[in-house]
Length: 494
Image 1 (cartoon, one colour):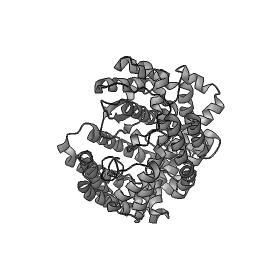
Image 2: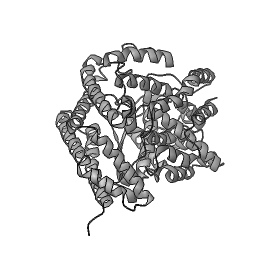
Image 3: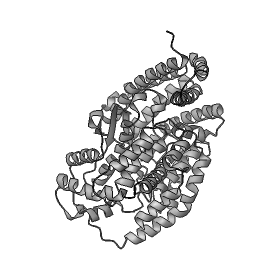
Image 4: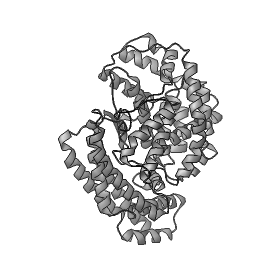
């Protein structure tokens, strides 16, 4: 019996998924295990795989199959999957294979060099590689924008946050720009009168890793379907059946590793919670990076920094580091919620964190739209850090514009997703509390099922069945409402 056009399309998607599985494990290994001298060969291999995946995704036969499948009697799930197949097909066809391969090669080379250039504060060495990455990103943005009728930056943003435009981001961020500076001032002034006991280290890496694994277990991570390793920049990769998380360690301070691990566990549980019966199809993918970040921030900020959660972490700290006054739950919560403007985005508290995103959003949009060049980045960075956080980053490239992996890896358009994620996460928890008035009491008892079950039902299992605005409306009863984020911060910190 001849398969239908839709069945032909799903079989092709399954093949793309399996090849992308191998690619994702090779990328994880490149970041976590690969010896330095292997990078050029690995970069060439990954570029080859990117080219092959692009070739399969742009097969001319797909045009007829997509049109034929649209005329077939499909159910709602199949129609949603077809919508997502067509969206990916449209984006792939905007780009020539040579550009896809050149992008892969340039990004891998730049990211690998960045790993040693950043600790050396070597901005001059970093610039030539970043220029090449930016040039290719601009070409990609130009081609995608022509195809989709969007601005260049919006065309890249659409890859991470489908349907979202920079005008939407500005609408969501405009109130934030107004109230955030005052909130930072008010909270730091309030906390300046508090007494906080600092933990006494050192905190051995082996003990930190064991602590991270215990925290992951507390938060329901399935170790039969994933693992934790170490890399220069924490991330969550792999595939839903085999999630690969990484973190990084500092022996003078365990909190960045612990909270980074909790953050990545949110990503990992989202991937593990995607609908297994549909894996391999675009409908079973995470909806967007903003929704993905809403999961990591639900775990790290909404739950991990919850006053009652400190009571769950305290015994784990004593188990791995020994007892000390700093680990008392009330003091631990103060440590987890200290608001202190700092240089490093991934170590930032949840109040100052959005300032780091506003800075990056403004700069990367200017870079892609041709309003700024690589050589302009340090001055733009220094001015915005002084304006937003009152910090001086002049000459400090490693803790300034070189600190993130995103630009060296060509991920322009990703940064806004972090603060969108924080806004979604606040909205999820506002909804949970309305539906489960005893939610905070449950958390205090160590009963986290109310949180995880709600996320699984409303976010994880829906995957990409609905476009983002519809997913948000179904989950919370309203469109994205940034007021929930402001209310959350004021409630927790003031």
